[in-house]
Image (cartoon, rainbow, N blue to C red):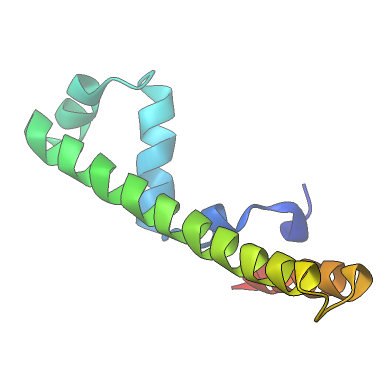
Length: 98
């Protein structure tokens, strides 16, 4: 997979988040096993997972809001469809670089 193909939400995560996801997958999604691996309580792991979910959701929401704004400009005939596609593609490539 090329870097530009990596979703923006993945690129917005810190190394710690990615390691948490890796361990989560390897533990088959067991928060109990994750708590044991991190030597913390189950509620602590659950809270960390909730923070990660919120982070991912916020990145995706930002993308949706921007794309919707561009689509509305097309619908209002203030922007051509070709230009809108170019702007959205450029925006997403820029997000992949961050």
